[in-house]
Amino acid sequence: MQNKSALYLLIAANAVSGFAQGISMLAIPWYFSDILDASSTFGIIYGAATFLTLFWGLYVGTLVDRFPRKNIFLLITLIGAGIIGSVALSGFYLGEVPMPLIGLVFCTTLFIYNVHYPTLYAFGQEITEKKNYGKINSIIEIQGQATSVISGALAAVLITGINQEFLNSIGFGHLDINVNPWELHEVFLMDAFTYLIAFGLILMIKYQPTVSKIIHKGSIIKRLKQGAAFLKENPLIFHFGVGSYAIFAMLLVHIHQLLPIYIHNHLSESSAVYAGAKILYALGALLSGIGIRWLFKNTSTIKAIIILMILSIVVFEVSAFTQSSFIIIIVSFVLGLTNAGTRILRVTYLFNYVPNHIIGRIGSVFQTINVFIRFAFIALFSLTFFAKENNVTWAYFICGLFIFISIFPLLIYYKKLVNLKSDE
Image (cartoon, rainbow, N blue to C red):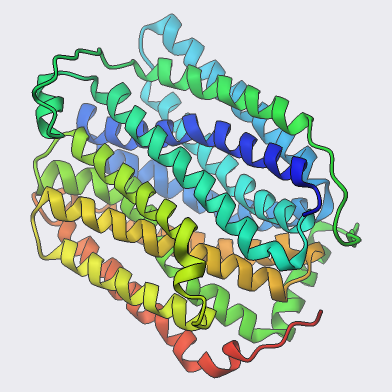
C-alpha cells in the first residue's frame, strides 16, 4: 500500500483530536440537560449552529477540493486549540464556564467536525489506491469508534465522577473507588491540548497522491456549480447520497439532542446510563468497522444499506414504545452498527463513482441537504412539548418514520444503482 506512514499519521491525529472532542460533545448536552436543566436552550443553540452549517457546509466542499487537505487539517486543529483553550482559561479565571462560552465550544466543535470529516475522507481517497478504498474506510471507522469507546468511558468518569452510586449502576458495587468529577473547563483544557498534539502529528505527514489532482481555481460559485453539474449528469449518485444519509441525520439528533432528555425525563436515570449508551453505540460502530464488509461480502452495497436502514427503523420505534435503560443502551448499540456500516458502504460506493478532485463538493451537497434535514428536526424537537414528561418518545417515533420514507429512493432506483458503472 502506498503512503502507509502518511495514513498511520493521519489516523493517529484523527484519534487524538477525536478523543477529547468526543468527551466535550458528550459532556455539553448532558451539562445543559442535567446540571442547568436547560434542554430547550441547548436545542436552540444546536439548531442555530446546525442552520449556520447549511451555508458553511457548501463552502467547505470548495475548500477541500481547492487547497491541500493537509493544510486544512493544520488550520482547523489550530483554531480548535485556540478557541477551546481560551474558553478553558476563562473558566479557570471565573471559576466556571458561562453558558454562552459553553455554547461557543459546542458550536466550534460542530463547525470543525463539518470540515474535519469531508477533509479526512477526501485525503484518504487521495492517498489510497482504489482497490483499498473499502479497507481504508473500515480502518478509519474502527479507529474512530475505538476512540469513542475510550472517550465515552472516560466521559462517564469525568462528568459524574466515580462513587458508590455510579459503581452500583454499572454492576461494580463491590469496589471501593472514589474519583471526583472534573469541572467543565478542565475537560475543555484537555480538549485544547489534544488539538495541539494532532497538529504536530499532521505536520509530519508526507505523501504522494495516487492520482493527479485536478484543481479548479475559479470562484466559489463556479466551483459549486461544477459540483452541482456533476450530480445533474449523474442523478443516481444524487438519489443514493440523499437516501443513504438518513440514519446519520437521525443518529446525530438522537445522540446530541434526544438521548439526554430521554434518559433524564423518560427513564429518570443518571449520566451513567447516558455514557453507557454512548459507549455501546461506539462498540456497535467498532464491530461494524471490523465486520461489515465481511458480513455483506456477497450482498450488493445498495441492498446492504437498505437492510441497515430497516434495522434502524425497528430500534427507533422500539425506543418510542418502551421504557427501559437496558433497551435504550441496546438501541444505541444497534444504531452504532447501522450508522457506521452505512457510512463505510456509502463512502466506498461514492469513492468508486466520484473523482477525487470533486469529492469535496459532492460531499458538501449531501452534507448540506443532511444539515437542512437535521435543522428541521432539531427545531421541531426543541419545542417544549418534547421536553415535557415522556413526550420525547414521540420524537423517536418520528425519527423511525423519516428513515422509512428515505428508503424509497433506494428501492425505486435499486437495479440502476446496483448496476451503475464506474468511469474508471
